[in-house]
Image (tube, rainbow, N blue to C red; front, side):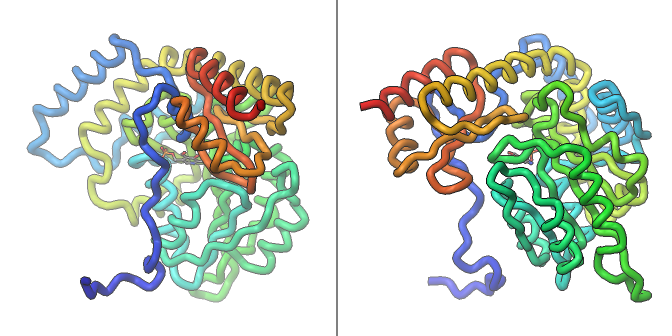
Length: 373
Ligand SMILES: Cc1ncc(COP(=O)(O)O)c(C=O)c1O
């Protein structure tokens, strides 16, 4: 038995880990089921080959080319153009968020979020010694804005995280709600060194933003008027590049510059930068399945309801459904039939992520077999 000085907050903790099982229908971690085409694979391989000739050197620390390409993409996707200095990138939006908590959280500071939500938020807080405070969402998983205002006034959080669309519920927030939170956040952060109140940083996590339904806006539209807003995105979902580990965030230059203080030197490898740039050059092709995945999602919600289940409206690439008396038993029975979903969210519920049409057929067949006597 070792006698290591593990930090108190880590005693008894287990590492983050959704099962990585090799089954025909892996529908548990909200990936895009479509691999890149041969043409994209070739271009990425060529870009990595070129980068490999310079691997004796550290990569570009400020990644201007990549941040410019991401800014260009955001302008096309949401109509909001920001200069590259207002975009930050790191190894997945996981790392981007960790940078946010490293820069603005810390001992004596609070991060506020709204449950049920993404299970990594408490880990970012724990890892930065930030206190994690949660407020429950309403029954339909929207925000009770009045209660949010009160929580902000009570806790003076340094950071508020709003996932929209939220994981695991799929709920997107209206801009009125985001605006209300931003208004409440003004002057509500911790006191600065002179004793004056700061503005709470509000992060809208739009990891699933591209899957939102028509007419659902992006919080990027609010950037120009809110210098305490940050909107994070990822190439892991709609782009189908989860293995690349590339997440990014748009905010003011001042906020991005604060993240540059805490990032490790050369945090994004030359290989990642080259592969991401090559992938972004194919963004239209990589995103071409987004519409069919959205259709699959809406069809899945409708089908689940027809079967008598509750299925929540979703603006993401997954659906929360149930309730089951013993959700663990349903999960296991689906797994026996080669379908891997996720046990997550409120008691009794499961989350299924959209796969290919044949994987979704396998899901429907398995669920019917499992739930109908
Ligand atoms: C809401 C949300 N945010 C962020 C992430 C992290 O994405 P990545 O680190 O792959 O960019 C996920 C991944 O599932 C997520 O569900």
